[in-house]
Amino acid sequence: MGLLDKARSYREKLIIESIKGVGDLFTKKPVTIEDLKILKDYYEKALSSSVSATKFGLLNLIIKVSEDVKYFSSVESIVSSLYTVLSRVGFDVEGIGYVRDKVDVIYGFLSEDELPTFFNVNYYLTTNGKTFFKVSGEMGTFLVAKCSSEINFDEDTDMVIKKCIDILSIALRLIQFKGFDIEKFWGYKNAFMLGQIYSLVSNKDIDDKDKLTMLLYYIKEVFGLNFVIVFENNNGILKPKIAFNFPIDMISSFKIDKNILDKNISSLEVVDLDLSKFFSYGSSNIVFLEYKDEIICLGANYDLSIIIPIISKYLS
Image 1 (tube, rainbow, N blue to C red):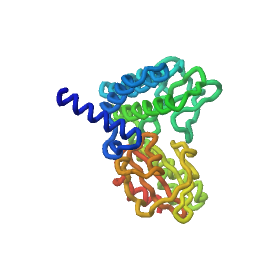
Image 2: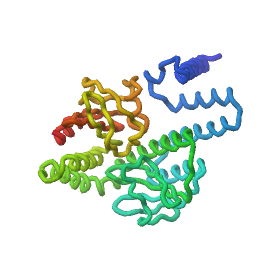
Image 3: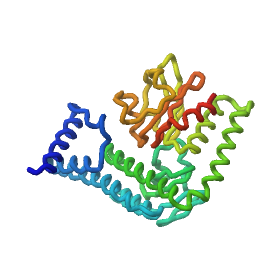
Image 4: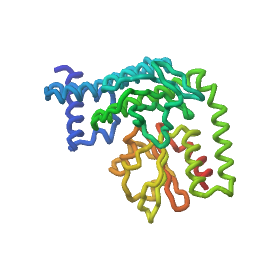
């Protein structure tokens, strides 16, 4: 056995031990595409049932989307990958559009009148016998796919679709930043939303609860946050009240250590089970901020340290 084969074999051993709970590899190092390939090869050798074959296909789908990202050069290429993902898991895709100030239909048929609001929705919803999937971009833009039926997929399929959409969302934002498209709406929308924030902060007539909800919505959009959650704080015991872009029923009440307030928390630093839930939907960084009798949790794909002072000022 050569050195490369030995290294791969040892890596496989660490991965399997960590999955079985007797190792801590994934708390020290993030999962890579190569890890997924090793894991796929391991299970293909160890198992051969038809159920396992289905799971191999799902795992392959994540690997394919991850590898395709480096070749994406346009919104259309992301639309093509989104079509592939949804088709592979059994959906009949009727149309995919790019939503900015209006809907640009890139594939099939899609009417602006039939689009759901996606308010406080994670990444998909079903309505009127249709299933709609959302791939978020910058400043409120997104791709939306309309499928012709409602499909109740299992937990594995749900996880795979969500991970693929997370990857496509990051790719969409990168393309927007690289291209002219982001320049067309970034300045105007930022100026508008910052204006709304300052207007809300200075308004004495709006109820504090409503003001906080609106303020957090605009803060989420301006700073490109993945999610915002508001908690009731009862002597350090947090209970979720409101959430933007995070399934609130995923979180039960938990105790928070005041030492973690106002600090960026990376997914690589977390071993606590309660905190690990906040990284389940694509965010690699979170922060908890105190606001009166409540705690605000923000999640993003970047280090939040640079915006903590700014947001704290808005919430003061």
